Image (tube, rainbow, N blue to C red; front, side, top):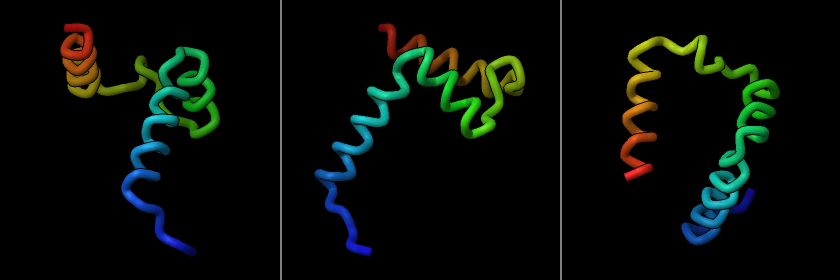
Length: 58
């Protein structure tokens, strides 16, 4: 399989971020991939995510 270039990697990453930016898409991904929900997440992980969210909102 052919390697993809850095520009293609960035484009794919940008598209994935856009795709998971909606609550509905995140919920579908969690269900599809059987990911833990926030309620199932350990407290220290939740606090790290809260901190990242806070910084993004600044």
